[in-house]
Image (cartoon, rainbow over all chains, first blue to last red):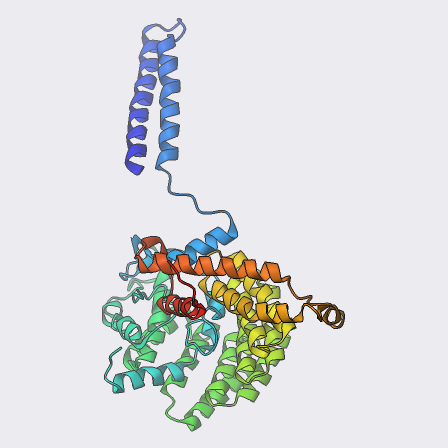
Length: 137
Length: 323
């Protein structure tokens, strides 16, 4: 779809430029005659093509229903969208907006939610135990 | 599946991921994010972005977790020179750093006293107040942590994170009624949080796994959570579990239901038919999620593997043949 959109945009732009150029040349050459019909038609057609191209090249729409949108986040997870920060970290797509509540996975799970209450020593101990156990799965 | 990303760390960090995260410290620490030029020029030639500081903060957490205290100190110093030692968030981060370095409970008590001092100077520093609760929890003084948290919530009753934490603390002590109240407060603040609905439903179920009114409430909240998120595995799992418990209870109590209706007007039990329909719906949704996930469909790759396995076990236990 993006290739198709880009093609439409290119064709539309060429026609638009041509129509504008023709209009300019016409007004310079015959200052007091009305604009010929073919230039008007070319202009309108080019604008139609260009509009269609812009719509076709636009990114996919997001679901506007809450449940569909949330379901999409849940199913697809966070994935990269081809953008990186200066530090080399990939900018990920939108995730669960309620993850900060730390309620997603039930009780006793060691999630990363509720950062204000982050248990440094518990996490350190967990990591140290993992290293002592040989650092495997 | 869980790639180590410092900008948006995953919701669950295993030791491997933590190691991968903290190993990103040297390249990040080797280049300075702030410009060495004097003031007006430094504004023009600054290389920092808002993400820079999120990454630094996450790096601080990651290196503290893996015991890379030297890197943590360096990151903390950077943050302090950028935002000033009096910044509320920096005070909190420094507190976390000191907590991590505390060798025993005595050291931790000292950190705690430091927090008290900070709060005496500025009682509005909520980051530090939350750290106080975390330290109490870490010392094993859960009852004190709950008291501290209730005081915090009296002053700031719209803090959903604190309500959620209080709910978890109460639940860990088996005080289901209080935990349910806390989760209901979370829902008042964020009525669309599907995870809070699922958690509340879990609490109702755990509070009384075999009586009708709590199971009814649990069913309602699980139903709401899947209404808010149409691929929420945990919601469908709960829906199936609760409805399979409710169906025998309801078919037993159809004869006595009239009497039951009177003493609990708040939660009239659901109709047997609708519970059966809900169970069917949950079964089909779970089966679809399992099928899509195990066939490697890219649009379903974000599901949690452990949850998919649990769902498969639930369906297997049910004994029905799934396609």
